[in-house]
Length: 220
Image 1 (cartoon, rainbow, N blue to C red):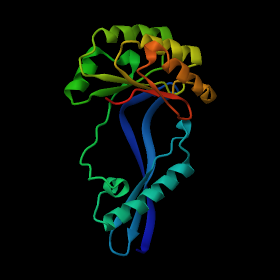
Image 2: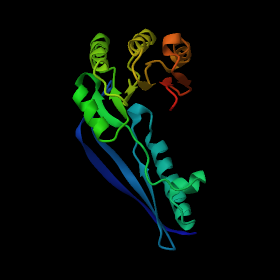
Image 3: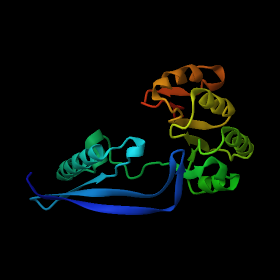
Image 4: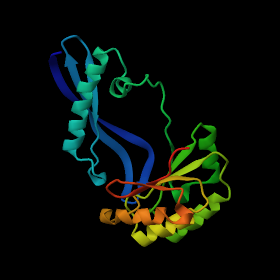
């Protein structure tokens, strides 16, 4: 397979509403599509969407896009979707994703119910955007009105100290929590999360060895 041309197509996608994180509000996502044309007429695509504030550099995003475009062409030549060509499994026509509900203090029982009715079994909620006591108070209010079958996935974007993370996890006791992403400001403290997870009230959670420390519960 020979390549006849390659180019970048920039894009800017405004969000329907600001996405609030502990590091500020995000109102749009900027990036570039990488287009790779082969002599047989096929086109491979890759997506470069750098986000330096979250550890995704321009160089890393560009490398990812270029690799994806090459793999996309290879999969097309094999007559397979990229997911099947990479995994060796049967092609997947759909994949489950979580609902996105934004900051915890803006989440209501009604919005969770709407997500469940829309087909989402897991909803992702941003935490670490407001005083911890306020978030815990609101979490307790939600906990008494959660519909059956829903699971919660929290993302703190590195907002907390170790004691704050432990306080939040303690408040999650008996709630259907699927995982807690990036709880700690200091990545080197991530190993302490194992000690929390091994406490009886948090034993449903297992340690994920990722650079900022994540707690996730195994799928059932």
